[in-house]
Length: 630
Image (cartoon, rainbow, N blue to C red; front, side):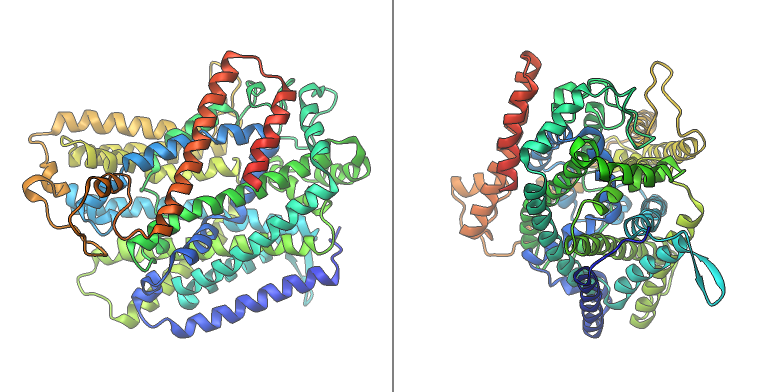
């Protein structure tokens, strides 16, 4: 059934594409060099980076993946997601990976791998990273095209000039074409400006959805529906989503009543915390933003500010899913539920059904105006991530895979031309892969299992190379091959037997299980082989420029004689280039993160020691979400 949209909805959509076109043409005219194409001439300030960089990772497929997760674990999953906060604090305060990597003075990760191991290992690692990233982003058009089809209610086929054409492939072609066009028009400059524009739209969309949820449903109705999840007879009232097997007594609100929750329960968040340590500074997606800042200080401030930006994105996503859950499970919306059930039942593929379920509910939930705004938000999120991914992996292919084999450097014109062809090639691969591949995995799980082809094996080489003097080239080769081969094998096995379970219980083996196993195995192999082949420890002082090898560090401002206070501030990352306002922002973000980290630790300990009722959790959520939304 084709979605009936008002003139206001279509005006919003048409206006969005007009502005994108203007930006694309304008930025294409000012891109004159390879540096501009790859790094936007390093001209980005903190506020541009805050909004634009967040949109590079706020993908339509990622949003749909969050819908899948939150529809299964509710706001209880928000609590366990806070586990990432203390982990993030530990990583930030210790400078895990990033501090020592900076001390090596390597300009790229590939350069570090060559310094620490060998040129051959650098080239092979670049190929593995490219292959991993290409597979990771190859399903973007697949999921987003299905969103477009089911959200707009488009038919499976349409007639054009007497030919019957598939809507799915047409939608993918258009989406890939938009992403490639933005990426090759002006490179990173076009990407940043369009991402900034789409980031502004995201802010407006989330504020509008918050207002709608508050006025249409209200806090009490949403919380009543979430609390009722604990008493639902799952045998008599199964979920509309065939792949979602709800467990009796599992709560969508109380995080300590989610013991039987499959896939997105407590073990999922513990494994994600482990992977956060393994992936720190290793994943190369969005590479153009890593070098786009005007100065290192602006890059640091952009990253600090982006934490609040992501808070808004996460809160908006949670509110949308909780409103959708209320529409599906509250008896006041029986008419809408009947329509949704009929449409969902017509989707034969249970994996596709899982991906498009919440978008279908949103389609029947939002009023005129908000439908168009939400459509623009999702399409914009698709374009903003697609162009960044195609640009990043296309650039990495040329810079780290092709150019090391060339003896003669490219001319400027050749370099720009081959960069554009490389980006277009990534888009073409994504289209072809999405045309033949069937995603038999939760979206978030796919990201981890494909990402582990790279970080599952590279983490041991990078972390071991930075922190262990006895790590050898042989160990790095063995670790990278182990992690990569294990991950690829896991993808193939999951594709053939998607419902395979562990021998000791009925838990389905998913992509996160495979990713964690790949990391653990690769580290074991790295240490064993390195111990067996190490003849002489590496001079870590020389690698990290310490002791007699220390050199004067680059600075943005002239540093006067340091006092005890300035030395302490430098220890926590506050350098002399921080203005008073910068320090205020830094401490505000640090106190915010530390406060919620302490809240999570104390709250978890208290709940493990005491029986906290769902009514108490209801009051607690009013404070938590109220503060975060405000």
